[in-house]
Length: 282
Image 1 (tube, rainbow, N blue to C red):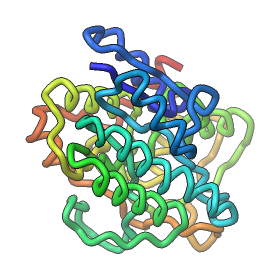
Image 2: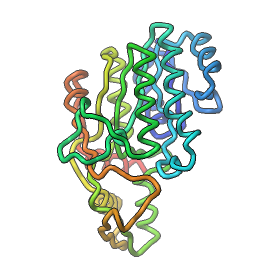
Image 3: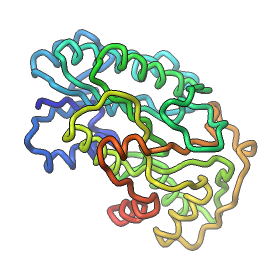
Image 4: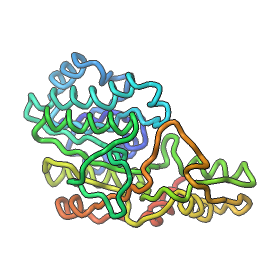
């Protein structure tokens, strides 16, 4: 197959490129904004037709959650309009699409893991535009999958793990929120799951994926410092109210992964095992 990967310079896009070598039976078109502007509908149509694209994995997104509250137009173009354009272009060819979405489509008021059929209720610009992106993809390409993930990190790009290691080495003390609960996702593990879906064959629908387990940002930070060997930085627990942000975050964003595990026969690693692997690579 000819597969288009968008957002190839991001965390997930880079992890996808590493795994392409193990799936060399396909031809990959790795693009970022320099190669293909996904907010340009005509450019997408031309690219998909000229390169006979059979499938698209959209790893591109506007992910600056707080800045999205001010940059609503750009956020909507990247997170809502662009996925619909991509889906329409590949859908016309009878192809498939995998759209990466987020736990922010929920408001985080549940106390049990979110399943794919739970009612969405985003309470930020980022969350609402990502939800619109999901809907645009499903409406324009019948052979499409949406994979919602959360707390993404990797050895590539800027992310929470790298930031906490840097700050842990620079500062004697850090305050970190303890009353927001979720599960980290190592982008490498998500890329493995995506390739499992491509290899087995796309089964349309919405799926959830993160690593196994449940943890707070505070506990996650403590684990990062312990694994990275940082001993001089004291980490203090903070209430969300003590650290106000322009965009509200879900207090509970644990995702139930039963559907993706059963559909594609994948095993999901425990969050700490994946964190150890990532920090070792760093």
